[in-house]
Length: 443
Ligand SMILES: C[S@@+](CC[C@H](N)C(=O)[O-])C[C@H]1O[C@@H](n2cnc3c(N)ncnc32)[C@H](O)[C@@H]1O
Image (cartoon, rainbow, N blue to C red; front, side, top):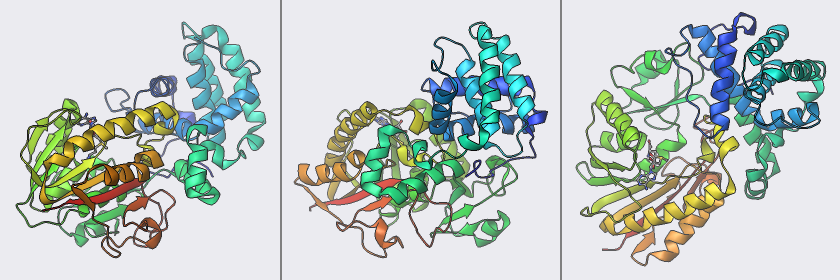
């Protein structure tokens, strides 16, 4: 296993990348390791597209390989990572990412630049010799270091749970998917085979297509500016497909931003209310809907507190969760999430569901979804809903309803997807991990 999937990757070579590129990569990695989500470096921070692509690749590779980089670091540094050492840790991590995992790396440039950057670092400068020695040692032992067990890429916080739930073989497939990254999945408001062909993609499920590789940023692909599609992992498109009502039906999208599912609901002709407690994310939702030519009622509110809204024909709760199911696209979720985070999200999801239930009108449906691979946020949570609200009855997902393969449908008619799932319609490249359950409210 080497390197992430070749997504928008102009011809970059490590040797060409300057000090600024690696410094920005190290700083970005430091921010992500401190708990921030990874936001790829943009034009404003690094103007040259090749440098930018290379810097972003260094960061994502260091994140995808975090489990192995920790093992290698422990083998290289007898006393472990020095504390309060400025960019030492991030520079070591991106240096290792480049030396061990990036095809066509330039070892001398990787080592020399990292050491030069650290020398200029106020807090870590005195450790430049140690960094130099560690990276040179890594270069000598590259062969052994690139053969570490794949499953140790999955952090201990999740490894045992996932081994128990998905099995040993699947754990290895998850590790592979983590290294490979995700293809680009798109959702369409209406079928557009010509555009799918122009994009070099292939249709997966109805109104969805997959693009394996591209030579441009998303916003420059055909049809983006005209609002003919939006980016949405195929698994993320499943929950909204379970709401099947006549056009004009009132639907509440309770945790809506940035709006992928809102867009699907609008495309079905529903009158959609999109609610979220994050103003900035709702602004993105609003921009996304405007580009797509959709409109929805947008409400900024805390769904964990009672909501004064009249009942809807359907309520979609795409609840905030650990997002561990999205690790192919957001490898930082595996680095930053703790067991306590999962427990916090479970409690929040319950408060949100408790507020959502009274908003489901008689005969209406509630769809609960999380993009988590954790049983506590999926299987257990749906069981809790089934046992907690006497007005709700399970509305099993029917075989054939989503073209879902048998192993994605649970015996109780819920849906469990994950990055290792064989789904013939989707083909290679996997999908995010989601758990989805549907309920009806009695008349
Ligand atoms: C999984 S994301 C939703 C993704 C969205 N449904 C889509 O398809 O694009 C969960 C959302 O829940 C929102 N959220 C978190 N806590 C919330 C709360 N207490 N009330 C309302 N929204 C909340 C977050 O801001 C985030 O946008």
